[in-house]
Structure formats: structure tokens, C-alpha cells
Image 1 (cartoon, helix red, strand yellow):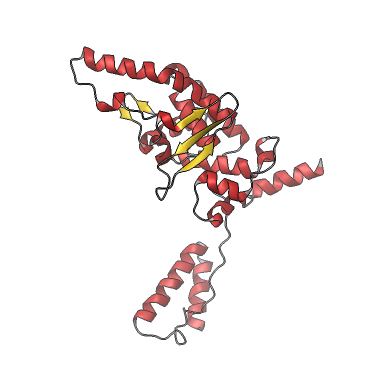
Image 2 (cartoon, helix red, strand yellow):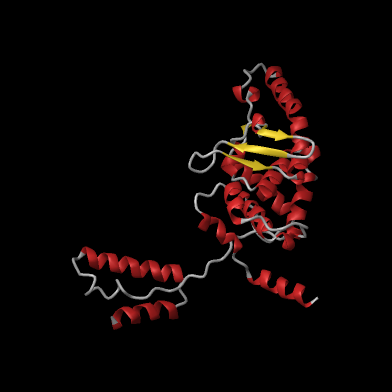
Length: 267
């Protein structure tokens, strides 16, 4: 057992991550079991592993979020609101990139004071209804109004060149670009470009905007939202998680969260 403990301490001294140390301990324990070493004789089987501190997934703060939406909105003249609609759904509805590109126009239901989106291609092939708040609805409107005209222009372009018009031009997919139905890779390219325009210090991907939606739902005060936090079971349904434990990781506070909370309490 002393050899196993010395091995663990040596890994700690070399500043390996807790997950790396635990994985190596588990691998050695499994290998010794493969060699028919009993659990009682296996020094790595009962060796205490390093406790892993859970951290919330990476998100962007309120100011960064506002900058991203503003720069996406500024692209409307160029892309007819496509980028703004995509960023708005990721940020304010928490969709995954794969769910976003699978959306059909018929999946969007926007009324005067409410809205919802039917996610058909959720993880594990599960459907769910996600509410669309005012920001999401307003973000979608320019693209929904321009989409038909955009596709009509694409159709005319093919016809003028004497080429067959691709089937995707006549499809019901919500997000279609100049080269076809948008892909998750295309969504990542759009968010990355907007992140660069907004001069963010990080690479802005679709999942970071999804994380931001979840963080704002659980910590509305951190995003200057005047409402109560969304209960975890409700957020679980909106995000399409199978287990509440997956959703609860968003409730983990960061150092910046603690600092902000203390500052607010002092005022």
C-alpha cells in the first residue's frame, strides 16, 4: 500500500490534474485485477482517490453576451438576420448546435406575447418544447421575414446560370445559407466569427452560448434580470438533460460569482 500511496503523492507533486491521477490509479488497479491479483492484495484498488472539484461549464458574462448580440445584429444587412437569429436561439433558448440546424420553420411558434420551439432532434432522439422569451422572438423575426426572399434569390441565381435548383432551396429547414442547409460546423463558424468581432478573449462556440443560457436561468441577478431563478427541474427539461445531476453542474458558483455576491452584500 505504501508504494501505491507514494505513486499517488508523486503524481500530486508533479501537478497532474485530479482526473488524470484518478484515471491512472484506476488503470493500474484494473491491470492488477487482470493479472488475477485479488482486491485485498491490490494496493491500488482501495487507494483513496483525489476529490474532484466540480466547476460550472464555461459561459460568458452579461457584458460579453450583450456585445455578442449587438455584433450579430449588426450583420443583418449582410446576412438578412441569419447570424442574429442563430445567436439569439443559442443564447436565449439554450439549444445545441445539432438541434438548431435540424429546426424546421413549422417548429417555430411565435405569437404576440409568447413563443415556443419544438426541438425534434434532441439528444437521445427525444423531443421537447422550449419557450421563446421576448429576446429570442425578437432575434428570430428579421430572419423569418427575410427567409423566403433569400431563398427566392438563391433559386434565381441557379436558374440564371442554367443549373438545376437543389432540393434544399425548397425545403422547410429554418436555417439555410448560400450553400445549403446550415450544419453544426457552419453554426460554429458563425459564432466564432461573431466572437472575434466582439473582441472576446475566448473562442465563442455554440455550446458556450448554451451554457450562458443555463447560467442566466439559474443566476438571473448576474445578468441583470429582474426575475426569480429557474428551478432545476424546469431547466433540465429546457436543456433536454436526462439526469438532474447534469443540470445541477450549472449551479456551481465560480470565484467571480462569489466575489460579485460579496460585493453586492456589502452595498
